[in-house]
Image 1 (tube, rainbow, N blue to C red):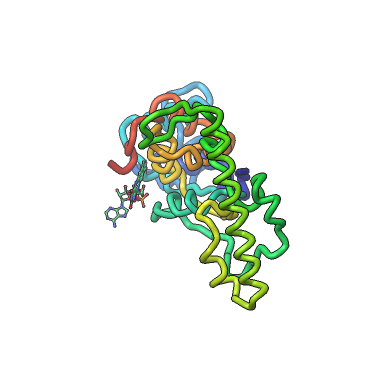
Image 2: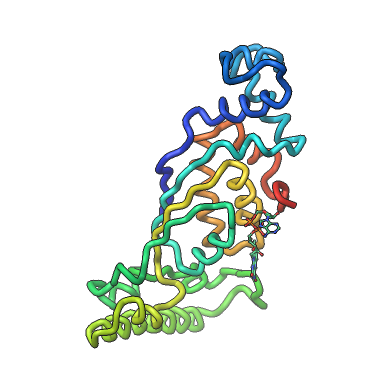
Length: 247
Ligand SMILES: Cc1cc2nc3c(=O)[nH]c(=O)nc-3n(C[C@H](O)[C@H](O)[C@H](O)COP(=O)(O)OP(=O)(O)OC[C@H]3O[C@@H](n4cnc5c(N)ncnc54)[C@H](O)[C@@H]3O)c2cc1C
């Protein structure tokens, strides 16, 4: 899996602060400098003022201003299972790589055993992996070998059957019915900063599945570079408190 920041609102924290100051200013924020807009906020420098205001907004649950700034991420190689989880979030916009118009006819089923085209969950090869809804953690070497064998054979056989069906003239949109839910997909998603924090509340939580949690952590790292004051505050004071932004 790989996550890239494609595009994002320029100077997002100026936008957030301007929107918030609009709510409490008698003057019109559209006709004055950012410095004038921020003048009443405590702080020696403009950076300190932004930190003061953003911290106050997040502490008091004044989340509206964070809806004005957006980021677009390109995500490579998540499973269709993970894709089904993230696309439940209704305020995120998505583009998903199609299995109707993209056919995977040139993949060698032998490579699928080694992770090509289908995501291999860590529990397949980690004897000590403990997942949610699992009775016990550790398994013997023999069980682990058997797990790996069954998993690899199954995914490789699925891709082989898929390609046979393509050869037999089935359109990709129908042949795909035999592909596993672990099949990899690329997607592009756009969300605002409030929604990003909500998704992180739900999907970086310990009860989320490892894959969407990893994706969310990568998104959060990139968000921290894009909108640093907001996401530093989020990481330090808010992360882990489930459903804080849409209880
Ligand atoms: C650990 C975990 C396990 C899950 N297991 C399952 C499962 O087994 N089966 C399953 O179906 N789903 C499951 N989900 C998905 C979950 O139920 C939500 O559908 C998903 O996380 C979207 O989040 P959200 O409800 O906050 O909505 P979002 O679409 O992210 O919307 C954000 C907020 O907007 C508000 N909102 C949006 N739309 C509406 C609306 N129509 N009416 C009222 N308020 C609205 C709500 O306050 C909502 O919290 C699971 C999620 C997690 C994190």
